[in-house]
Every structure is written in structure tokens, then in C-alpha cells.
Length: 221
Image 1: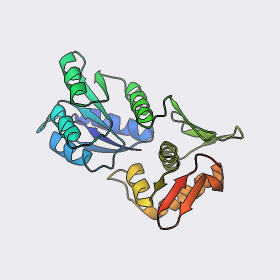
Image 2 (image 1 turned 90 degrees about the vertical axis):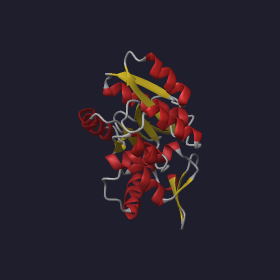
Image 3 (image 1 turned 60 degrees about the horizontal axis):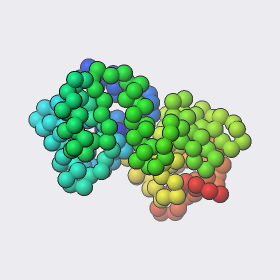
């Protein structure tokens, strides 16, 4: 999954980016509100973490502009711990959740996971789809035969995206957009390699190839 981190505190960004990448997110950073608004409108992100105190354009204005333009990107806003009015303004502007500073990164990751699940109508801390159970903390998948398989970072990101979008045609370019950040070298042909790896774990019938279109993860067999 691809995440937009809109935060101007470089020390906080350095910490968060590393921890979020470890948790399985491709992370792009915007250190001001103008860039954040532009990137958020690119429609390549699954979730945004938005600091309300951004320079050039504050987070409230960024969020209002997104929502006014029909952009429904799930957003967690970051506020000062005692700034209750910022939380209220954030929710009025269209925020989905908030977190006060300072915070523990573990809480942020849990909130991001919960928000993504809610946005896909898949509540809970573990993704359970079609007999598969994806542990998002351990980055493992348990198959119907009860065997648990450790996933590489890309395998995990790819499978999570499939599980959140079952029965939908997903092109290689779309998959590439959502599992890599701007700093990564993108090669859509590599997606074929990781799909093959997942088929070895899940079974060939789980991921169908649609020639000229992409792939479909089967919710039922």
C-alpha cells in the first residue's frame, strides 16, 4: 500500500518513514501543504498522514480542497496534543481519524491499518479473505491448510493490495503505483515475478491473469 506523509518536521519524517516502510508501506513525503495537496490529488495513494501545521498551505486547507474536489483519500491528521480545536476543525474538513503529538509510531500504524480496513469494509486487525489470513504485524499469511508463510516486503504489499481489492481487475501499472514509492525503481515486469511467488504459496488458481488487462484475485474458487 502506498502512503503520503505530509509533515515538515525532518527528524520526525526520518523516523516515521523508516518505521512505516518496515510496516509494509511505500512512503512518499511532502514537507509543505502545496506539494501535499498536489500529490494527494494524483490518486495513487491508499492513505495520507497529514500534519495540520504545514508551511505554505495548512493541513486544514489542503484537506478542505481535497474533499471539495471529490478526493476521498483516507486521511489521518496529526495535531498538537492539547489543540482540541484543531481536531474538531480536522473532522469538519473531512478527516477520518486524528492523532495528537507526540505519539507512539505503533499507535499510528494501528490506526492506519484500521482506517484502511474500514475504507474497504474489512474491519479487524487481520485480513481474512477467502480462507486466507494475513497477519499485518508479522507480515505472514496462513493458508487454508493451516500453514503459515513468511512474506518478503514486496510479496506482503502485493498480497495485501490483492486482498483489499478481491474480484477486481488490477493492471500491472496500478499495482506498481501502489506498492512502490517515488524513490524506488519501478519495473512493472517485476510484478509478474512476485505474482508467481504468491501463486506458489497460495495456489495458481488464486490469482488469475487477464491477458492485456492485469490480474484478478479470486475471492472464491
